[in-house]
Image (cartoon, rainbow, N blue to C red):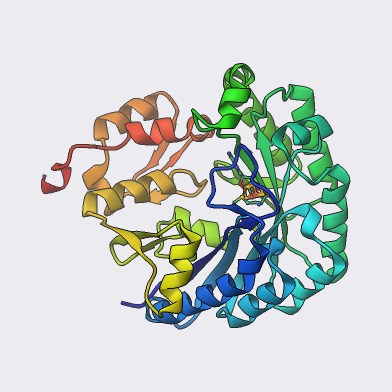
Length: 375
Ligand SMILES: C[S@@+](CC[C@H](N)C(=O)[O-])C[C@H]1O[C@@H](n2cnc3c(N)ncnc32)[C@H](O)[C@@H]1O
Ligand code: SF4
C-alpha cells in the first residue's frame, strides 16, 4: 500500500457554539488546547505508516483552528508533516497580524475564512461574532502578511435572506477578490433549536434555494470564477489552478487520513470515525493507544457508488471504466434525453442543469441492488 496523500486534522474548539452548526465543535476549553495539540501529534505518530512519504495536502478544519491558544497552534503546525497545500480554516475575528504572520511563517499557504454573509441582521440571526468589517479586516491582515490564496465561505438559504441580500453578499465577496469561494446551502437539522426557532422562514427558503444557487453560479462565473464543484468556485488565473486540492481529493475518492476528536478516515477499503468525546480521545492518546473508533469495511459496490456520486459533483468527466457495475444504463439514457447528463463514450459529466439538481440526479444514475456487482 502506498499510503494516503491527504491528511485532515480536526480542531473542535470555537469561541461559542453556533446553533446552526453540525460539526464536532466545543466552546472554549482553553485549558485543553495544548493537551489536544499533543494528542493530535501522538495520533499522527501512531498512524504515520498509513500516510504516503510525501503528502499532497494537509487541512486543519474545525471547529475553529485559529481559536487555538497560539502556543498550541504553533506546536501543532510544527509537528505536522509538510505538504504542497496546507490549509487552515479561520474565523474572521481570530485573524490578528500576529496570527496571520504565524500562519505564513509555518508554511500555511491557503486560508479558508468563514464569512457566511455580510448582512448584519443575518449574521446576528446566525449568532456570528464577526461582522462585515471583521471579514474585510481579516482579509487585509492576511494579505499584508503575504497570504495569496484565500477562500471565503458564504451561506445561502439563511432565514429571512432575500435575493437582494444574496446579491449584496456576492458584491461584497467579489470586491475582496478571494482566490476561491465556497457557497453552501444552509442545512438546518430537523429537531435542532435553530430549526425549531426558524421553521417557517426555513420552509420559505427551501422554495428559493434553486434560484439562489442559479444566481450564485451566474454571478460568479460572469466574474471570472470556475464553478468546479457543486458548492465551490475557483478564480481563473493563468498559470495557477486555484481549486482546493484537498477537497478535490475527497471528490475524486482518494484515500485520506483524518486525525482528531470525531475525525473520519477513508483508507484501504475501511472507513473509521474517532470517538467524538474530548475526554476519551485525550485519555486514549495519553496511554499511547489509538482512540476508540467506529470502523466500517466498505464493500466494492459502496466504493464505486461513492466514486460516481462524488465525481459527478465536479465539472470534469468521470471515467466509466470501473464504475459500470453500479451505473443504471436506463437512467443514463433517460437523463441524457432530459439534458441532465452528457455522455462522451468512455466518460460522463452532469450538464449545468444536472449539476444544479445535484445529488438527486446522481442517485438516479446508480444501481442500488446489493447484488449488482455479481452481474
Ligand atoms: C467546518 S465549518 C468551520 C468554519 C468556521 N468555524 C466558521 O464558523 O467560520 C466550515 C464551513 O461550513 C459551513 N457550515 C457550517 N454550518 C453549516 C450548516 N449548518 N449548513 C451548511 N454549511 C455550514 C460554513 O460556511 C463554515 O464556514
Ligand atoms: S464557529 Fe464555525 S465550527 Fe464553530 S460552532 Fe460556529 S459554525 Fe460551527
